[in-house]
Image 1 (tube, rainbow, N blue to C red):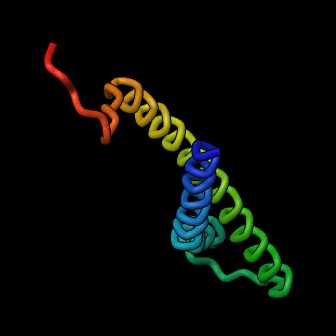
Image 2 (image 1 turned 180 degrees about the horizontal axis):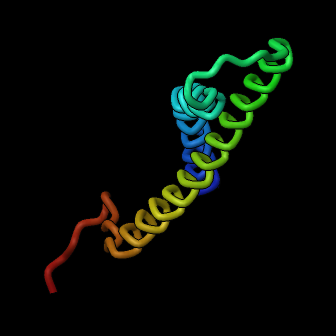
Image 3 (image 1 turned 180 degrees about the vertical axis):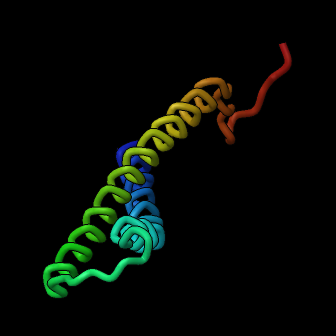
Length: 103
């Protein structure tokens, strides 16, 4: 159960970071993608453009969240495996109440 909690925490952090990064990078990429070439004037249907740009931003955010979740899930698996190896390599601690008698 502890491993599942650790992995879930990694996935949640990755999802949030991915969405934040996509929210910061997405508008610049969408603006670049929707620029008119050679600064020509164009006539457009503004409500349709707003719907398209909003849809693209949400798509970027979902993709970023998915990439972040997958990347941090992989990091979480590596982190969990390393912690298990360290725990197995460590010798068990002697009981605290027991005294050792010389042989």
